Amino acid sequence: MIIICGTPGTGKTEVANLLKRHGFKVIHLSNLVIREKLYLKYDEERDSYIIDEKKLIDKLIEIEKETSEPLIVEGIGAEIIPNKFVDICFVLICEPKELEKRLKSKGYPYTKIQENLEAERLSLIWGEALDNYGRSKVVVIDTTDLTIDEVVEHIMKEIKKRGLL
Ligand SMILES: Nc1ncnc2c1ncn2[C@@H]1O[C@H](COP(=O)(O)OP(=O)(O)OP(=O)(O)O)[C@@H](O)[C@H]1O
Ligand SMILES: [Mg+2]
Image (tube, rainbow, N blue to C red; front, side, top):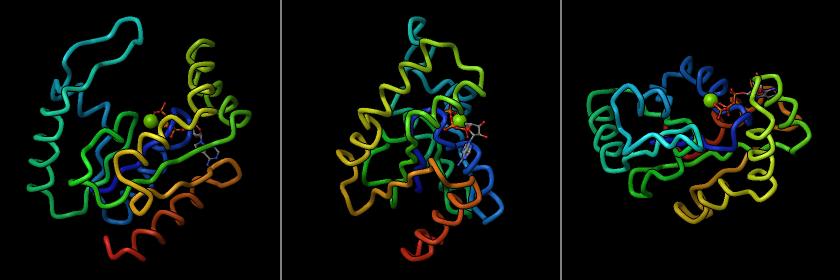
């Protein structure tokens, strides 16, 4: 399983959508969690679902069995998938100034933008990925000055180098 994680606005979804052309099955985590009800409850304060990790893992294993293409899981929270299921984890990062522009263009509310900028300054998701998978499986891509196509190229190079396709 290939993971693409990162703070909102770093480009996970757009990058993953382009990767479909390269023969991957792409799972957008939040869609799957909502569609299959893989959550414990809805957190009103944070306006998000709290993922039921066990249900999620079982579902991902089921999808992996049914699919011939390699699986890419993208989204916030993807970095919680246990190490033993993960071949490589891409962490997309972005400088706060550029990230702010992207989040504004997505129409995120002010407080949500500030919260995400702070998370990015603290490298929270990158830290979580390192904790879970270790340095050898974590590949960080600074997307600040890259186009979406360049990020895709970088990911494909790394996947091929590791014989994952
Ligand atoms: N490398 C890039 N260069 C410039 N703009 C980008 C880049 N990557 C993404 N964007 C733009 O930033 C915005 C956020 O991208 P996207 O929705 O893919 O991020 P995301 O990480 O999936 O965010 P979320 O966690 O909120 O779903 C989009 O408007 C997208 O076009
Ligand atoms: Mg997204």
